[in-house]
Image (cartoon, rainbow, N blue to C red; front, side):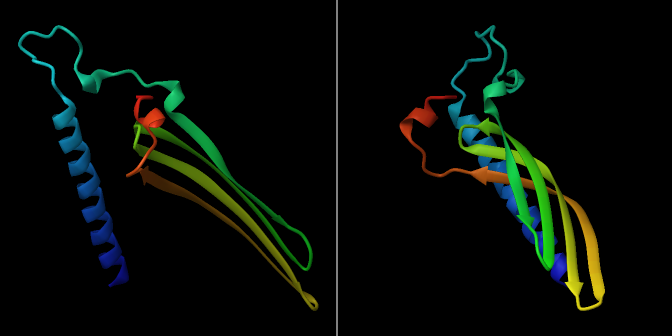
Length: 126
């Protein structure tokens, strides 16, 4: 039941973001296609300035040992819209009297960021 609700929420959220993106593009387009000989806006090249990267590194040593490495990277599609992804690895080890509990967790993530308010310098960057 919870998976169905989460799946519906994600689908509605993606549809909203895609609809919002299309409406913004249509309002920005002021080029008359009958006269213009320039390439359409959708055929733009990817700019390396729009890539961002980062991540997390966690280290805890003691009775409970945790090591977490999570690199991530993203790309600004618009100055206000970022899409990205990353990988995750977590090692967990705990000493409990004579027992030892240990595990490794692998995973990935997808994320996006929508900026509603930004400075004028970032708006002019595009």
